Length: 102
Image 1 (spheres, rainbow, N blue to C red):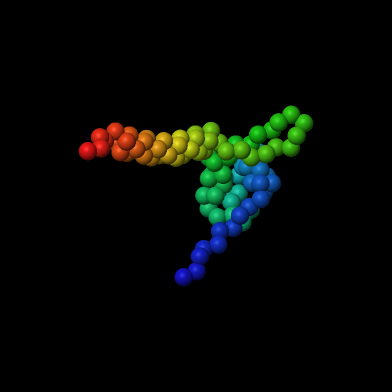
Image 2 (image 1 turned 90 degrees about the vertical axis):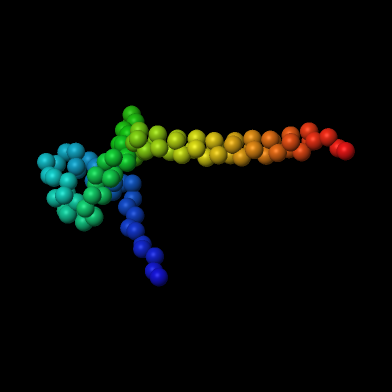
């Protein structure tokens, strides 16, 4: 079975596409056709990224607030699973060492 190869776009292309979406009066679908990208991709980028323009520096893409919150939740869930596993191991160790030898 062959794996699907997804096309990746450079950050500069995404920035330019999001800027065009904001400034041109075109619809999202028409802009996607003009740029030759798959339908719905421009809206995904719009929800996924926010354009950050620091002073005296070129604009760059950063995760949107929603994506950043999802990443933080995922990190905390991994940390919780690790701490829960450690606690279970400690419980077993306490149980083993607290047994009285007969």
